[in-house]
Amino acid sequence: MSAAEQLLLGFAHEAASGVADFMPAESNRAALAWLARWPAWPAPALVIYGPPGCGKSHLARIWAARSGASRLDPAALPDAPPRAAVLDPATPVEGELALLRLYNGVAEQGGHLLLTARCPVAGWGLALADLASRLRAAPAVAIGAPDDALLAALLVKLFDDRQLAVSDGVVGYLLRHMERSFAAARALVDALDRHSLRERRPVTIALARRVLGTDQPS
Image 1: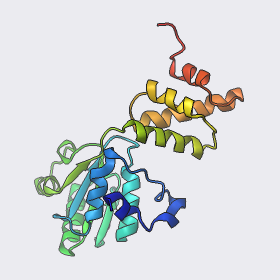
Image 2: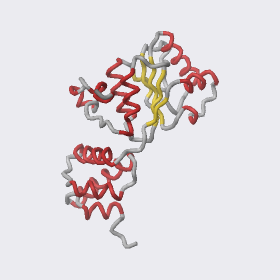
Image 3: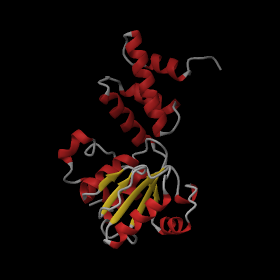
Image 4: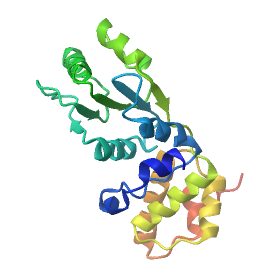
């Protein structure tokens, strides 16, 4: 059984919260494997980083549901740290001393802390040496760029979420011409939805050409 199957098995009842429809793929396989290893992490914290819209928050919800972790506001960290906690996102950090106390408090209880960010800890600009050293020693895993299969599945899901019926041909055309990122997929579906509503027409390849600008002569 894969790490994704181990982690997602038993969460089918969570569909309303978006946990059950997480899409395992090559780009997030390493992150899923780390979550599946819990509670046998080699350090009190795990950092998951990647671009906007890549699934960091989705993974954080999955782990919080599995571990019973508290989802905390980085700008208002509690004086009494819980045994397990999620900071999503962990940056920008406001109050590095408070974050250090949270890390130490979780560690003293033998608990764990999951942090998400857009970049590795080295890029957070931490000024507190003790905090920086602890977080840099924590395992960190990147969510990579999506492959065609994941992008296609994401596009289909985003269209389904908006109750838009779109053909396989439209999805294939978008894959061949769009920017290769999660954020671009969301922005593109949003733009197609707005044009479709405004013009009262379905999402077709012709509409996709206009929205993408690929109908213009080179």
